[in-house]
Length: 319
Image (cartoon, rainbow, N blue to C red; front, side, top):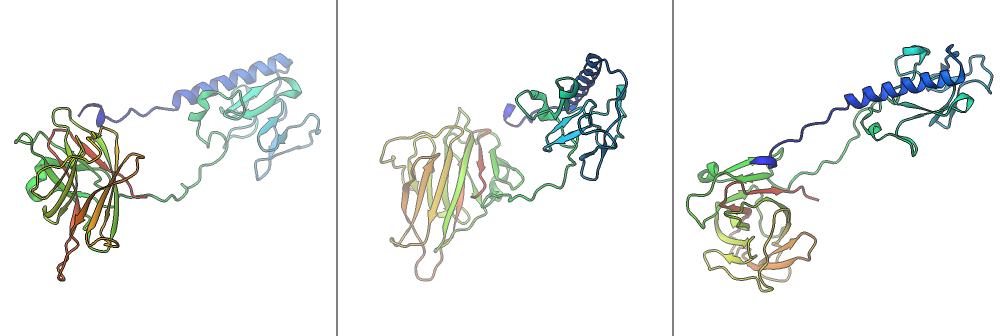
């Protein structure tokens, strides 16, 4: 399936870290030679919270911590897990610490802070900056409202993938030209409910681009209400196709199709199916979905039908 299923090659941050370390060592060595100070100065002592302690050094010539974001010192700040004064050329600085200025005006600041930050600083881990990585913050993860489950007779026609089985792909062209094969969802809709789902048309094969979506009765029985992607025409059960009242409209790859099925029967004795494309306002496509009568319940399921090889549709997470 070409580039659609080929994963991107992950980028490595190792070259960026090695370059950052080499740049810092050169910067620290150049700063000392410019001051004529070839002898390493007393390294700062660190308290329990990472703030340096004077250790007998005068406030004017000692190492101070400015507001938690800058070092003012003639010596590099040590890396996490390294004793003060260790490192090449007596420089215990972190590879993410850059040297700005010289003499007593030298400011040591983490790369990525300020206008002069290097573009490679985005690849530096927070641990290199001296901030230990903590546990991942809990996040609300959204899931699709249902999954795709093709019927037993059509299992060989589709490939269902994704962590939540939300992606359905047509495998090969259907043997009969001009015919599509349905794949139903696991959601069962009945009277009194209001249902929403969103489809992303990821792949429309040029040889057979038509995709149909809507609802079927359980087991691909009546009632059947489907909409075509090529002209947005619609069909009921075995009736012929009807054109869109506002004119033909073709859907393209990358379009989001928002479907709403209202089976509450608030103002009509039937249910309705509405469709909105991308950010456009919704339009009612069907207003005659049976709700059941005489105590007989009518259950319907979402359905997608495809006939062309590599056609692919993704069910988006519910909001």
